[in-house]
Image (cartoon, rainbow, N blue to C red; front, side, top):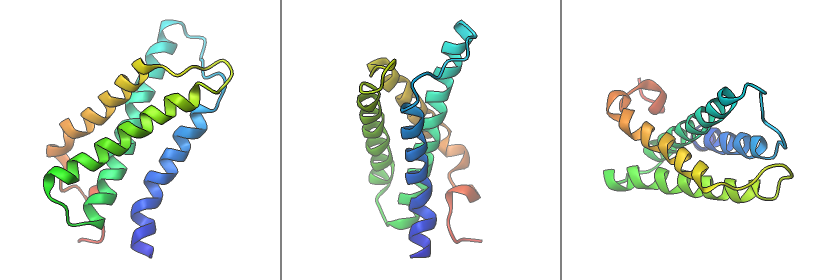
Length: 129
């Protein structure tokens, strides 16, 4: 049970954090174009981290063929990005935006682009010395 919690609580908590941020009515900094850039960097970062945490959980929970180890985190993260934008459509002053899903997908893709560099890094491995 401890292993399960250590592996699956972080991605669930991170998803909850994303949900919380999506519920905030106004996330502007009044920095003009920098506000836009910072919000898009936040999207990429949120989904990079979410995908990394889900990948870590799958890698250390199941014996999956490489294709499935790569596919499940993508599907879950992308599905969450879609539902996150749907959630935002119910928040006053916010709207669901399909362009944001594309930006979220860039964060997912960035994780996989960098995966060969840190595939065996300690933060992706659970319980191994």
